[in-house]
Amino acid sequence: MAKKKWGRLTVAMQCSTCKKVNYFTSLNKATTPKLEEKKYCKQCKTHTAHTSREKLK
Image (cartoon, rainbow, N blue to C red):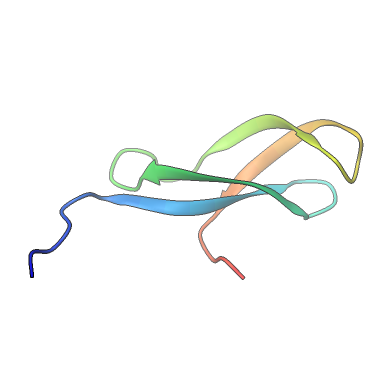
């Protein structure tokens, strides 16, 4: 069976204020080590910075 040669990971986007995981996305680990975006948090009810987290629960 052939190996997948993609360097893409599925990561969780975690809110920086309440630490709740709201979004999932994929990124190329070789070119993007850490991802940070402003997204809407349902818990905080506002747009906050979300950072990528590799470890999925």
